[in-house]
Image (cartoon, rainbow, N blue to C red; front, top):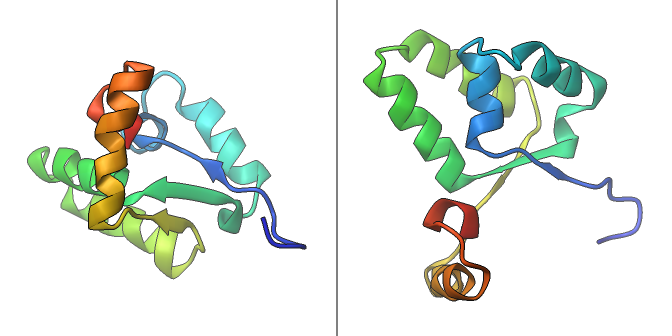
Length: 105
């Protein structure tokens, strides 16, 4: 980690969806999101695409547009991605750590 760099808190798909879909733990997620600056949060491109698919299938396009704006236009959330060769490490993590693809990613 570079000097002066804040820690990143990786929030997976389910955390974001909990808040977006106003599920049971939504108030707790809101409290977390409000407690820290958006620059301290990260999500993977896999999670972002999963959220886009879920909200798209539910025809919640306005919510999806607002989510993207909140994270990347008004906010400064870090989007993490893997290059092609790095994706090969996902299958190794699946095997050694007994994870599903999304958790290994």
